[in-house]
Length: 331
Ligand code: NAX
Image 1 (cartoon, rainbow, N blue to C red):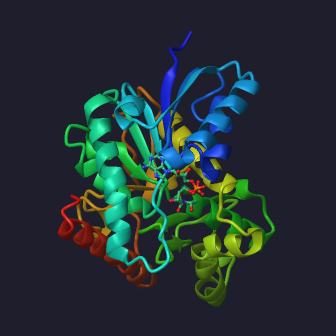
Image 2 (tube, rainbow, N blue to C red):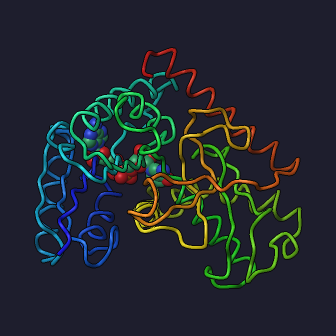
């Protein structure tokens, strides 16, 4: 039988954690035959909530769940970790400037990156969900010089899933009909959901939608969906974010097959995105054991002027964030 995989979730006492952990325990992260050991990392303020969630996980009597530890110690949390889901982050408080926000998150993701460097399994896979996700992933990666940068990723899968679902809803087709959607750049309002390579039941999406809808409705709707959820639900996306985290890791480990998806991965300079930035790209993955465990950026796509401008705008924001964390000595 397969050996249990160690999965560490930070911010486990929070609202994304509450959705995410049950799906991991039920086998949706890695597969219905893969046992998991959970490590929940929290800070004192969230510890009781995480402990309560751990009690409920026990009550789920999940056959695949081989143990749960709750800790406030990053070294213990990441010792031997195979999959690290970095969800806990410092939200922007009232009157907080961007530099304060980046600094507060540097104090979280730097030490967590160092703990991963010290103790993680050789083939560790890290997904950063906590915002600003791309730059937090960059900080964690910089603090883990012995872990290949390809092992650190940032979540743009929620944006990707929103982009797929909004197109499907507009055209009244099932989500499954849609393929080839891309989200480029930063997980922020500057992200660019790109339909220029998308197909709907094999037909180019650009033949099925009009340009005005694309520019004036679709792109802003996807990019501002997080704010819409907050307005309607009264709190930020949680179950959909957890679902996207499951999708990201599931596809990374099990392969994307003949489709592609979007993920924040370290740039190798593809599509003019400066090397070393963690930016969202169209990506594919080979099943575990069949590749080197890195996402592959889909190559050779033509980028028209409309897309070029939007990709560049979001990437410029990532460059600024990188400069800001460099100036703060966080990378
Ligand atoms: P919550 O505030 O409900 O939970 C966050 C938890 O993290 C809290 O329990 C807190 O105690 C814990 N925490 C804080 N610092 C920690 C540390 N140093 N170590 C361990 N735990 C720590 O937030 P939630 O709604 O769960 O969202 C979590 C993060 O996901 C936020 O940063 C949020 O902005 C981000 N999101 C990212 C998304 C994405 O697509 N990449 C979408 C959803 C979400 O907005």
